[in-house]
Image (cartoon, rainbow, N blue to C red; front, side, top):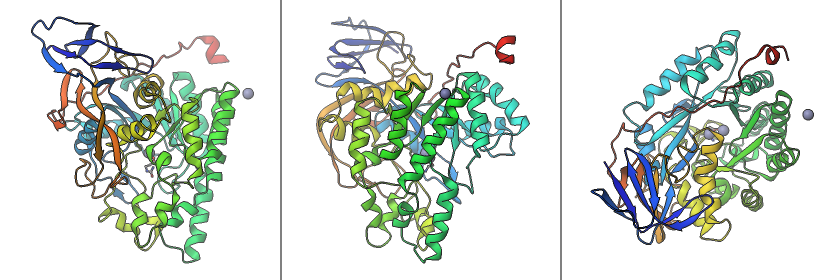
Length: 469
Ligand code: URP
Ligand code: ZN
Ligand code: ZN
Ligand code: ZN
């Protein structure tokens, strides 16, 4: 039951110091030098970083999408996440316009139940708001401890909401002190460009990128920012890929708007040329928004460094290349959108960011864990190493080199977008609430032991005044 982590270098978003950590009943109960073992199991972290477990704020596990379903479910997805140093995920619970939101949340609980190897929560996606779901939404957020709503401005055939629905979601979220996460791309114009490309006989994967220009991400980002601002709501822009969107976020933040931004490993490290490879190879790199020309990367790194972007999500949404990606062999618009990143999010950001001198180790911890905990209401239960926090801990060796490969990864897909990349640093052991999930690079966790985490909504009391305002 008790564990004592000894000899490591505790590394948080703000501090770095040598100390031992005593864990009891899943919580950190003491931090200090030379703590007495007193019967506790020793976890030797000599020479290693001891970091808060990664929090991945953007995953799609077992999600129906693009006429198929993702290849990673809650078992393979959370095991892979754990190998990669992630101890909590926040997954998008999909709802359909006409269905009760409660039904959607129940369905998502069923998907995760008995399968998740790490802790988890949900963001609730809204595609339409009827008078019924408008009434239901605040009650459900409160009941389920959900502090985040998701709205898509793209994917007209499946998820896209109208501006009016988006605005209504902002208003409800404002009253609940919840954050609205928005996929910012102009879906209607993209659909027109896709149609044009198909009429012209353009079928290859590269047309996925060419029909979703950065301007349409910038335009939608600006629209979401202004709608959120008028409603007085907090906005979180998911998967920011380009300078056009960044410029809008930076200018809004400079005006004091309550806007946050996330980017994802591929946008920082891969570029649009990946989709232009010969044959159908480019399908491995089809997700939305698409990869951009390389010069955008430096803008994203700079924005992360300047804290204009706060978090790194994996946007895990995996489809096997020899399986489901083949749906689009003759038509790029039928390639299921998404990639497998839940496992390498932590390693890629450490290796490309910290080891290459682009960001500090503290920035890294902030982006991989702490910021998401704060934005989504998990902090300080999660997202830091402090007395009273959950003992979600990664013991990370910053010196080892490792080659990424589909042969050795744990995601349920037949390719890795980083095949052959050498990364510096590796999570060696990972604990969730004080229990090993990964021990010396082996999975020793219990499938189904992950806990659903209710988050605290700081609901403002509805006084007569606020109702009339
Ligand atoms: O292509 C992607 N990103 N698939 C997942 C859905 C989304 O837009 O996040
Ligand atoms: Zn999206
Ligand atoms: Zn104003
Ligand atoms: Zn996504």
